[in-house]
Each structure stands twice: as structure tokens, then as C-alpha cells.
Length: 460
Image (cartoon, rainbow, N blue to C red; front, side, top):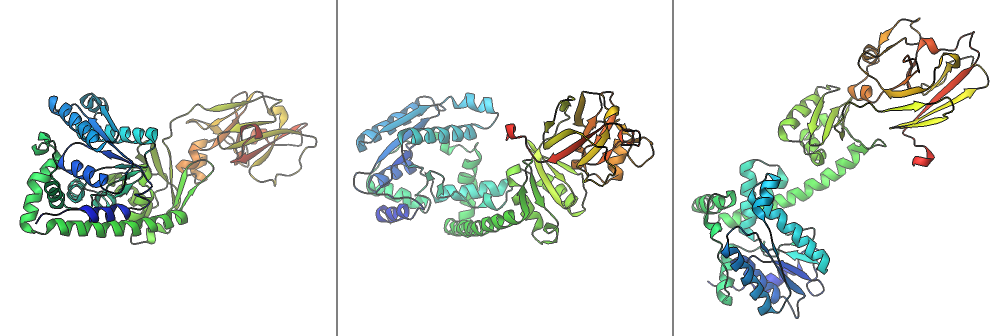
């Protein structure tokens, strides 16, 4: 039975979220094949005087045939009396440069250029000819490679400024409309080749599935729709838990509380979704989850250009850390210096303090022991000092940090105030060195205050 999509298609377009057929303008991505020719015919009959244009990518992969496709689409635009845009790409060179497949290179080139034209020419939407079978092939492709829920939801009908109004329709319905309307098209010979993964699914796998179940296409479409509904519910839940568990602090790092996650039956899956922007693969996720459950503070995992640190009931997502020689110099007349995560202030005291009950962020030292310029830097392997309260005994900073139960993150972010003669004066915000303490012989004193997560006014 022949089938004219006509009215059903107009309803499909009108139901797309945010699309206003009578007001919007449309840039149609047209290859010249059956699907895109049918899309053109249906869109041109959408209403009176539609504001549309045809756009064609010539990937120059099939010699004269590629040029023939371009000419065909140009003539099609002329027949419908709408603007025509085309672009030729050196797709093979792009694939070699990026190291990806030809198909991935073509896809990237296509969508980048279409968006460029859309913005420059002021079109509301980019329209592609993807249909129901394309969505099923995408589902099977991702399923075969291994994926999470988002990979099993097929192709969305709307993605940003891209809409796909043919998605609800089967290949048979599209071909039927093609015949009823007396349309013509260009055949792409590469569609018959099975060297590409998509074509293998189309020509080798789908026929077997149809033999197992003649209604496979309809069943798969229902399954994808169910998964899309589940995905919407899951995204709502992720947004809720992201608000509950994730915090971006002043240092720019993300902190995810894991104390409640480990009690949840879906904790691992939730953590994976919360970490999705960090591009954590499933192998690393397995090891990371074990470290979280076993509270392995200091465990570190790579994630693209970032890294994930397990740290006392939370995981920290931050840029990958490298060994740094970052330091700042303090002259005798320097009232304050900006550190990466706060301000260190210095002032001369008029009176010698009598007690040491200030918070750990404040310390007074014997000014006569200081040799300027001072330096503030990160701690280094081999550093040692004489912690106040140990009667002048030396201790390696590494051992001091262990005794104080510093996490790996704490150690990496510790600041050290160093005297001009290379003696350590103060583990900033923590412990003064015995040699710089105030004594009965002290004649002058200087006070240091560390204001964490604060910026100097000139730098805010």
C-alpha cells in the first residue's frame, strides 16, 4: 500500500518542542538520496511560502559522483526556488589530521559548517533527514560497542538547533511517499558497502533481526521511546543529586560527597553520572568505586585532562597536578602577598605578645631571626623543620604530614614560609618552627596572618 506522509508529517513538525512552522526558518541538510529528497518535498509543502534553503556537503570521496550529487541538489534548490549553499571538504586530509575515521571527520565537518551557515544566514533550525531506521542503527551500534543509558536512546528529534522531523517514520513509509510523489534522487554507491560499521548493521544484522521478528522495527522503536522516557527521569534524578552532593568551591575544583553514595544501591551508577563531564571510562570507574567504598584517602585516578582524588568522604575533580616551582617573595616592606588560594599578610607588632592562643591562621615570630627576602612555596621532598613544642628536635615535613593525618590533597596544597637562610619558619596555617618562637629575649616581633580563599582587592 502506497503511503503519502503529507498531513502526518506536518503534525510531526508542529509537535517538535520549540518549533513554529509558520514563523521559523529552516536550513535543510540535503545529500540527494531518497531520504533527503523526501524531506525536501515534505518541508516545501509544510505551508504557504516556507522560509527555507538547501545546504549540501561535498566530501569529495567519490570523484565525479560527489560532484554530480552537488549539481543535483543545486538543481533541486532551483526547482523549488530557494537559496542553495554548498561546501567542498578535503575529508581524507581531515581524517588523517585528526587520526579519526573518515565517517567521524565527515560528520564533524558537516555539522560545524551547517551551524556556521545557520548563524550567518539567520536560519532558526537545521533540518536533517534521519528516520526511524537510522535511530535503530544508532541504538545497535552503541549496544554492540558497550554503552550506558544515553547511548541506547537512539537519535533525538531535537538537539540544540538541529531537528529531525522524519524520525517517527519508517524507511518503508519514506520510500512509499517517494513513489507516490514521483520524486527522483541520487544513489550513493558507498551505501551498499559493508566495510563501514553502520552499513554492516544495515545489510547484515537488521535482516537477521527481521527474520526473528517481522515487527522488529516497530518493537525497537517502542523500546527506544521507553528508554528515552527512562533517560528523562534519570536526568531529573541526576540533577537532583548533583544539587545535593556536588559543590564547586573557591579553588575551582568540584567536590562530590561520597559518604551517602556508598549506602545507596545505585551509588556507583550515580557517581559515574556525576563524573560524566570528566570523561571517566568504565575501567577507571570500577577501581575508583572500590577506592571510595574502602575509603582509600589519597587514591588518584586520571580522567582526560583532569584527575580525581579520593579524600575523606569525598572525591575531588581537578585539573591534573604537576610538580611546580611556584613561589612568591616577601620583602621587609611587603604588607601582603597573593597566593594561589589566599592572602598572606605581614605586619610589625608594637608590643611583644604574651600568649599563643591565636587561631592556626595567625602566628607571631621573633623578627630578629628573619632574614629577608622570605619566600612562600610548596613543600618539597627532603624539607625538614623543628616543630614548636618538640624542644628543637628536627622532623621531616613528610613525617609531620603523616602524623597530622594529611591527605594527599592536603600535602599538595600546603604552603611553607621559608626564611632567607633557607630555614623553614612556618607550615602556613599549621605549625611554627621552634627557632622563630617568641621568647623572653625577643625585642621585636612580626605577625603573619593567612586568609584562605581570599584575593587582594587589586586582583578581585
